[in-house]
Image (cartoon, rainbow, N blue to C red; front, top):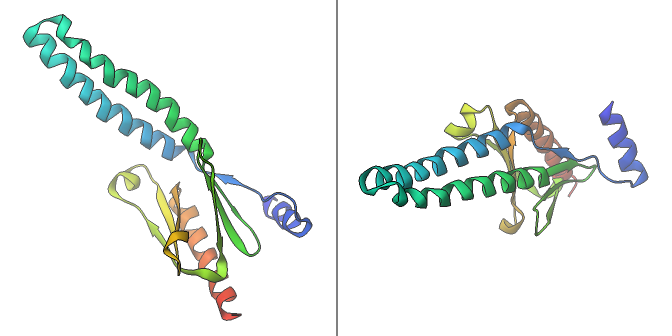
Length: 167
């Protein structure tokens, strides 16, 4: 049903149909934040607190404050990422303070990769990376479900081949 509405939106020149990133990426990033800053809080607070007294445990508050601040910032950053498939190009939009929108024409794509590191695989995530002739226009969509990443790779490759054949 959504595909029909996006085709209608493209034909009428309306706004593209944007797709946000799945919540798994946010969960992964927040877990990494808690693990790393939690370890830092333990090291800065527990050891000095045990060895020199409770007053020396105060530096542990710094990583805990950073964790709370980072938790909010990660949520805002995750909500800012989105992408849209249009008739002739792919749009990728991201950024909270500085919005960045990348337009990648299908005919200019040279390579579409699906990558997934060990942490991403553990959380069931993959990234799609688009390579073009101009290095400045390479684009990445992080944190997709692997099935969606493969579908997107296959569709973009197919559209890229069709557009480049017409050049």
